[in-house]
Amino acid sequence: MATKIAVPIAAGNLDQARQQIKTAESSGAEMLELRTDYLENLSVDLVKSLIAEARAATLAPLPIIVTCRDIRQGGAIDYPGRLRIEVLTEALKAGVEFIDLEYENFLSSENQERIRRAMSQASKGRLILSTHNFETKFPNIVKLHRHIQTLYPAAIPKLVYKANHINDCFEAFDLLHKTSGERIVFCMGQVGVISRIIAKKLNSFVTFASIDDKNATAPGQLTIEQLKTIYRWDSIDADTKLYGVIGSPVGHSISPVVHNACFAEAGENKLYLPLLVEGGRDEFDYFLRQIFIKNWLGFRGLSVTIPHKENALNFVKENHGVVEPLAEKIGAVNTIIVGPNDILFAYNTDYSAAMDAIGSKVDLKNLPAAVIGAGGVAKAIVAGLSQAGAKVTIYNRTIERGEKLAAEFGCEFAPLDNLANLEAKLVINCTSIGMYPNIDETPVPGDYLKKDMVVFDTIYNPPRTLLLKQAEEKGAQTIEGLLMFIGQAAAQFKLFTGKAPDTKLMRKTILNYL
Image (cartoon, rainbow, N blue to C red; front, top):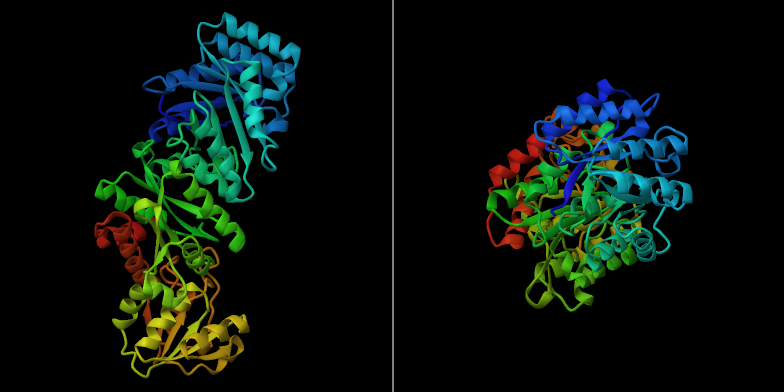
């Protein structure tokens, strides 16, 4: 059975529920979860009415899960345990396909007897035994899964925990990979989002998606529109190859939107994910080791962004991969490909994309240029500017890092305080200052900008940053980061697929999304 999208109906009354059910069906829900613990003045009769509403509101019958969650496991209203059990047993009598009860509450002999009796008398209906950890991983998820199966072999185990780092997700992936049959396993939280998306690839029984952000019932729950539109839910299968952008942060990134749209247009069975890898070199290396060791996950390529571009270069070199000479010279990579025999190949597509964007506006020979930042993007741009003969000064908050980059390419360095004396003709922001959601920030105060400057902001979200707006007000020429983003993304897409993408589709997709 293919993984279903279950949409929670978390309404306070029948009128609200009716509207939520209608929205869920029109959005493409494949199953409904009636969260009866959200209902005010809960009663058995009210639940029966809700089930009837759900049956009547959909054109084609959708399978129904009835849940009356214990507040200790994420429930909305603290209803008595006896009432919650009664709701579930009466839901079975009403003919629902599934009821969901907390595993720890099923351990009670009284609850277990009532549920087993109701299950034996029901004409249909399956039991989901669920357990949630809203703080961290389970001490032993394999053992917990085995206990649930042993206690009630016909039950569908549901094991959900909060991932505090993306590396916490691997225990969930391993459990899905090593077990079979019907089970529901995924991670909550921002870094757990990928587990909800690839649930279908790993054959989890269901994944959960809300009708909108306001009605999410758990942290990290995507909307059904995001799951179906951005992440191509209907196209995912066991053979889908995975790609993604590694960075911290990645919430602002439009790379998943762009690459998934281009994969769809090209007819590729590929899926591009947001991979929030927090921490430093150790956490980054662990994540990459895991996804490449677990080749059944199907990762074949990665985009790499702040702050991991140097980490990516070092990882590929230390794992006997191949680094293109340009990326080696720059000292940073933004693309990793898994090649034949699982050999890693590393590239830097920032360089040519940035030079194409800048070269369309200005002659770089002997041009005074100010580069703000000293990370991976700055390295690529400084390399290009230096090769073209520009006179580069690097401005950076961390003096040691800025001086090191300047020494690498024979440039000048100045602390950020010196921006007040800015005399450059080309100003390039290579930091994340001004990136969504912090759109009211700028790395260069407007008073420092002049009419005879060309100002380039490598940030693409938003397309018109505060820096660019203030530069335009001074009469300066501006270059949007979108130009560079499309250039580097197009080069990455060709590395991912061997095909040239439709850059007009890329731009249209980005602007529609933003």
